[in-house]
Image (cartoon, rainbow over all chains, first blue to last red; front, side, top):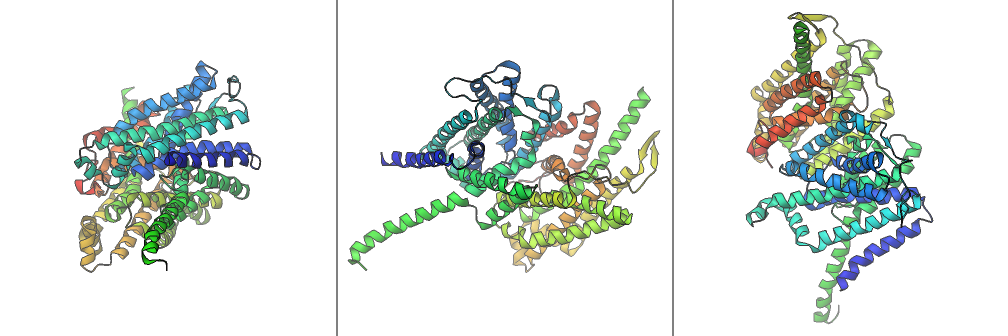
Length: 328
Length: 292
């Protein structure tokens, strides 16, 4: 019961904090942060828990985004259904792509993933230009009807909705990373895949499932993006934005629950501030990546967690020593 | 009609060969760095773009392409040396993931700086060799032939350097077993620096010779990334011969694919890559040793 409360309190504190921040910060910024944190969650999980560096994340964002976009443009007007269609589309494509990509070892995985991202960009920009309109993209602004319960066409509604989705994603990943056997086996894959295979696990299945989960979450973020911006164009799969997800996960701490949120908060905040002075924010992203990688791989939340864990361990070590010696 | 088709095919093959030359020069660095240092050096694409921009600047200032090429390679040599000594050498002992993210950061920062210095508008570079050659009734631009010859020359030079010189032998030994080379008393960190700088200069040369084909733009490094990766993956990481063979394959697939259907140019190499990886997951010439 105590554990149950602990994991919930963290999420509720963040919920309340973010809700009150709405008074101080522009809601457009917060919406972007929340959606980006969902997007980075998958990437963070892949890097931190599975040891797979995914530079092709925009491709998986784009599948969800185009799933939702194509539904809204050609078939229907309901945003809820559009998000569902986007998630399902990305789920199906991830299942297919995963069977191929996950077979490779980590260096080849990264290279293939990035190549896949570039190919996806070309597919959306050139090969399917008849349906996706390439760089101009699908404009959906007049095609979305107001939805019941939460109106997704209003800025307030999409903020609330993405917030609820983010909480659900957090809870899901909290369960996945801290409580399930599956999460533990994922960590084993990162540490020593051979040993895990020796113990009788099928590592391919584990990696495949983790890949599908992480990238479907990215697809969900893509679908939310489409509904939020009321448009989708080929630039969403641009490989030069692949670094953003990696930068955010490394900055916040890969494999931690709140790392992506903290990372996207700092990253998007910095990007907004810096782009007022310099038009080329790439310099900043590159600089952040270098600093984070040289400073240590744990990131902000990761360092904080390990510091707290160390302090807790020290405290529990001190207690018996004090009683035995009768005080120092 | 048939005559026309043959002409198209011949010019496509020559174009493909010259593209292979560019791909080879760019990816030989990636391959060498992976073989020796176990790092995937994504900042090679920054040196590629830097080389192209330097040749644009110097050529438009002095009017001499040769001077531009030399200047570009020298600048890259200095920049790569500084980057290696300051940043890259700190992650050699860590897993591949670190070098990948770190050098991607270097790449992004470099692209941002290029945008800052030269602006966003694409810049043209005049072809240094005019005139054309007649092959089987098809006129082929002389510069393409020059690029092909240059790439062959560089391949031979790299092979000579690796097989016949002492430094090259040390690098080859390092690729096989870095620990033993260290035990023999060879300064392996200096070897790493030499290899990295050499790779970067070759990448810059790729940028220099590719500049007259395309407009020099800040995103040129990003747009060639996918092809370079496909070449490296098909050939197998860490193998010079494999890189050469797969550069030939990818160049032909790109140019002949574009003849059939334009978007195929980008997708056909990807399909080839998937096909080869399904048969041999380490690429054509990648050994089991590299598979870690």
